[in-house]
Length: 111
Image 1 (tube, rainbow, N blue to C red):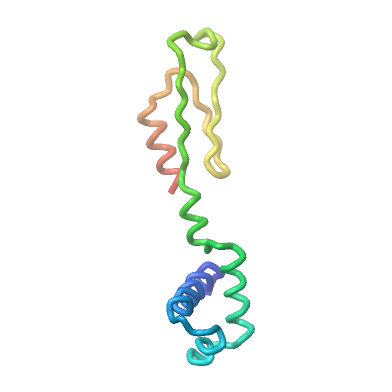
Image 2: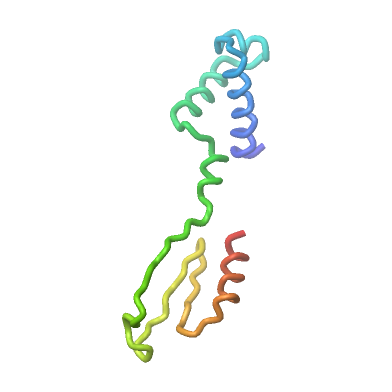
């Protein structure tokens, strides 16, 4: 069982305990869970406030809106490429790039 799987399992237990209204001792005794295990995971979820599942969901792509004027900032013949980093992959984007193709590539790499 991976750590992610354990966190999912223990998050479900933690939520069930919270909803039960019972003390930790009562609930864990009823479920035959070891004291140290229960307290360890309760501490993990209280300290972090979120599970790794919620954290990974918050790692979705975030976009920034950029507003530009009509005049180019750099003359066309002096434009340098920009680099887009997706994980450990870098993409060099030059002037005139097919934006639909670039969008498709970034979408595939983001999976």
